[in-house]
Image (cartoon, rainbow, N blue to C red):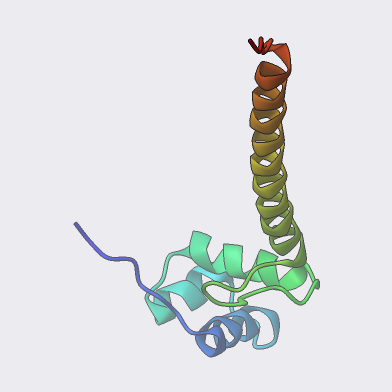
Length: 103
């Protein structure tokens, strides 16, 4: 089992500049760098998006991912609160249905 190689942001940007600024094609640049042409193409596409989120690193979430995470957390909390209220309501109804007879 092989482990995945991790490339730094600087390495990725240098590889992209070989293609975009220095006139190398994908095959030449990837062969010189020892990476696959498809990987270099993926890096170029990410950088061209222009959203500032390319190569943000491990564990850094996009704003959409962060919002989804927060909404899921809130959803879990609300479901738990709803279950607590359901249990409370059912226990109150049981007490109300009891008839007490005093002698």
